[in-house]
Image (tube, rainbow, N blue to C red; front, side, top):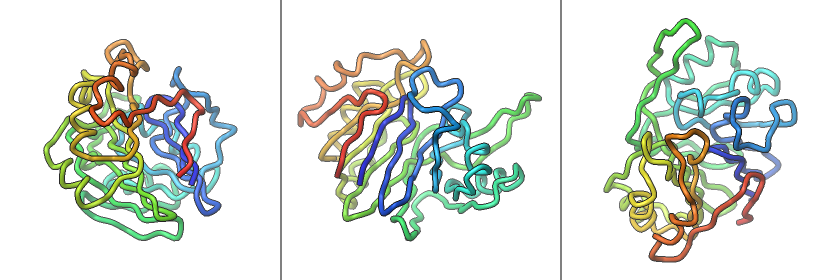
Length: 227
């Protein structure tokens, strides 16, 4: 399984001949190395519907007939936007797909989409995602604050690789993210959701220095890890 990072919260997993794309915020993302026309996802997984996570989902899903997985409310909303293949889920639920198992976890954040007319559309609960394939588990925390039940997530689901937001302001910052890493007991930890906008400017190396287990790794855009 190959897991690559593409700026902000964009993560791509290649497994069993399937390309799984998390939170495909590409257009307008100054931190990414991707171009929408060059990305060919089979599956898109959304942690929540804010513009910097929902991103280019509709265009990519329509073009490639990709399956989009997310909250039940997001699945319904996207089906009204011309996305033909959706799979709605909710917090605590898991589903075994041909390409791997997806389980949604708690995330403390908000979840809505603001239309061009300024209308706010509620899109259900935000989530983190546990993705398991080829005997390995990757945790994408989405946008979240620190919460103590991360201990339970780590205890019940041994995590090989965790992507944690460190930007602060909208999510947990480096100090809380370091404690989250300790709770989760992941084998490797990668910081995400930082430096894309001025309010979330952070030095990821300082985050790594806070990790007691010394298990952090900064991935530049396009870098990857193989599990």
